[in-house]
Amino acid sequence: MNKPGAASENQNEQSTISSSLRLALIAGILTTIADGIATIAALQAIDEEIISQQQDKQDQMELDAKLEKLQEQIDQLTDELLKIKSSNS
Image (cartoon, rainbow, N blue to C red; front, side, top):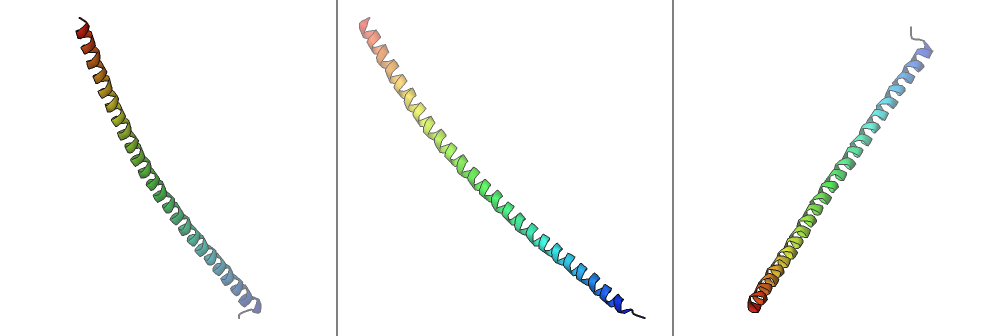
């Protein structure tokens, strides 16, 4: 009823299924690891962007302070020029 070759053929079919399942499992594990690495990369990019924005904000505040100081100096010079002009008149 069962041929001796049939048992061997049935065993080969099971090992093929087992190999394909193992490959699917390995592929799934590698995909999960790749997704984890992509998530870490995205988190790092977010952190870098936050740091960059903080630095830009600090730089802008420094520039604003310098501009304010320059405006004060211009105002003082204008006042001095007006005083000199009015004293010469």
